Length: 374
Image 1 (cartoon, one colour):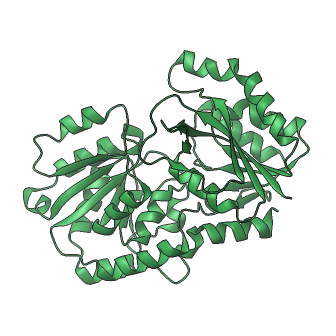
Image 2 (spheres, one colour; image 1 turned 90 degrees about the vertical axis):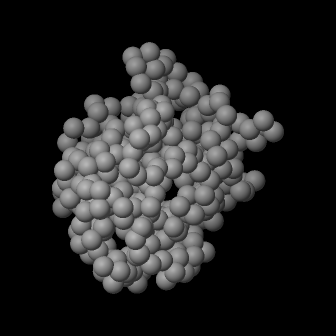
């Protein structure tokens, strides 16, 4: 029997019926990982709050969730809680590693500052690290920079976003999986049915915060000339955050129509992609967000920041539009360019080359793991 222990900060919740559900994107990935493991144990954080609608259950009895105390967050006390809970976290990790053949640690995360050194120096288990953040972030938080440095210096495989000339041999370029084979087929149908006729629809998917670029997006949209803004039917805002009410208030008297959807189920987000013509993510720092590939699968043209590995997959003017800087001016220019596209050019840009979207499927990800790590 081949058993994997996954260690992460992934948010989990308990429903009123007592069922455990977790962050939809990670849980879906793990639900597909069980195809190449006999058993998976996920050691991750359990939050004492109502689950968002985007949370999902595990689909196999061979996946077991082991709760960790929910630590981390903003503020000094929240950061100190990471250290005070370290003995509990390490004890539960160690208990489950004993019966496992492999581990996967998902970085960067607050607990990584002590879990990564523990795995490097005190565990002989086979395994790999998944670094989902910006591998080339110059101004990374100290904790993230430390984790990246440690991962470069140790010898176990590390899967990273993008392709870099100076990456160590054990740091392997991997796409972030987010699509099923069924969704690939659904995407092809959606693209065939989508036409670029004004007024069009835009979407933003992510945490509602300045770092994800929502401030920049709203500023740029409000600065569009009146004649140009008439080409936009609605702007879908998918996600949640502490500043949601602030952003909603900003749009109350706008010339544009905004719909704040909050968290949506996987199918709910896909429905937004199917009707939208572009996903706009002027992020300050990213790895390669799954939502970019998911949106492209359904014919949403990405208008995104040229940070980290995003430019390795999105070619400006070919299959998307890249923002050279994290500014309102840069986004405004690309929004205007997008809204001036012809129907023929839009179709050309949203028609993915053969095999491109396949690289973001769970099947392809599992094949790569079997070939290069397991």
